[in-house]
Length: 306
Image (cartoon, rainbow, N blue to C red; front, top):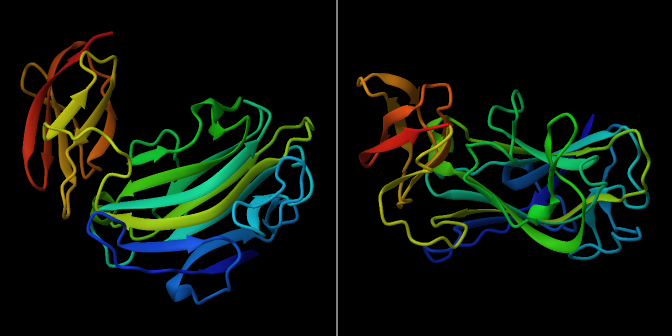
């Protein structure tokens, strides 16, 4: 069984440069109907350590907004050999362009590189999941301390180590791409992972979850001059593509890698306007990268050299 917490949505109409709709949950509000709520589901499993309540630990002593937070047990260190998940559901109804930003406050206390917390997202109802830390479909993911990023022994990227400062985390998706591929619901899965050695660490604490839709970049970057930027070049295989974000429905419709003989050797369909591709399967040499959006197109040279 799964217990689902239904949370009140606060809605407001703001200026065009601000979020148009805001969904918030401080884990202290009254339940509301599923038709207008941001949903957090915690499986009813005795081994699942996620709880909502007042933190009463040595490091996790208080919520960001008192009294409650979401954390890996409100009283005890996390147990050994544990994998526990909870899922946040976000439905950005009636929107087909802009940026969907999911935001939360967090603290961490893990044995670095051994235990940790991972975040995955799904757009097909949970049939498949992508790790948020290394997915090219994530528009931006920031706000955390880079020192708290690590990889477990099985290769899973995670939040790890200890950070007792409240960090303001932002996870952002391109709505144009979501709508373009028929992704009308975003699921975010937060998973706590621990090994067989007890270290008395306290785990992961989250508070003040919010979801918002915005028409502008969620980070303050320098204004991009060129319509399409591709880097690095030369590259050893990984290419990052950034299209200057414009208002309205805006998505990359097709990416084509063209070799020196004029042949299309790699193709990608509908993609976010910030996207990464790997061309390392091809021989070294000079290629042309054709990027076509629903608004314009560019062809740029790319040198593959290893």
